[in-house]
Image (tube, rainbow, N blue to C red):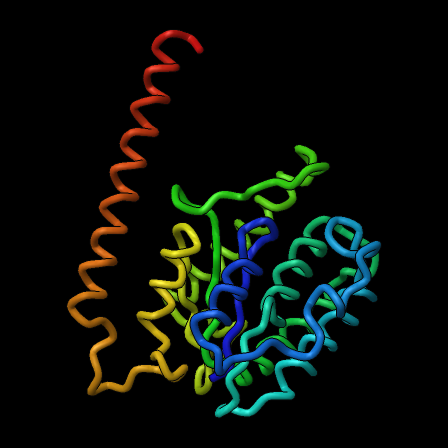
Amino acid sequence: MRIAVSGSGRMGKTTFVNDFLKNWTNYSLPQKTYRELIEEDKHSQNTDGKHQLKYLDALVKQVEGYKRNDNVIHDRCPLDNLVYSMWAYDKGNKGCDAIMMERTIGTVKESMRNLDIIFVITTSPMNKIVLREGDTKKDLKYLEEIDNIFKEIFTRYGKDGCHAFFPKDDSPALIDLHGNPEERIALAKMYVTPEGGTYGEDQTVLNTDEMLKMQELLTQQQDALKEENKEKDLYRKFGL
């Protein structure tokens, strides 16, 4: 099965990929990672149309290199390129014009046929952007804006399939990942069998033990959020 992990930076995608490979040892990474495909000096806020198309072509060739029965997991995929290009187009970055976007959308849409599942990690009370040393407020704003685009695409996909970006007849499943690393792997096990395939219509996705474990994790998350909100209310009460 062909899987990808997408989302804004600083959301733990690579950690999830590494944990996934430990749990599904019959999976592998592509020969080159996303970071090896890009040039760091032109990535992020400084990107331009020429480089975005270059990255897109590399990512498309990467996903096209695998067949449906291959077990591979990608750290990012063409969908990520689309999101970053949409951001750059909105900001008016050099070369990020309507022609570039038209090519990007068409290419990304067709490339989605080469993926079976895309796990998407976006912010939530359980998912937060974790800045690294040296990151600035500008970096945080940028990551939040990228995250919002991912959320919009995910929301539209859930409502109507988002056929502007995904083919109607052969689209990957978009699955939301949240929680800590252990919880994210537990969620992945709801969709990926121990052998690395998908659950058939005659199979139950979760057994009883798995359902109890997920319920316990969700309860712990809810309790932690309640305590966090109580603490914030206390700080506000005393002007801290």
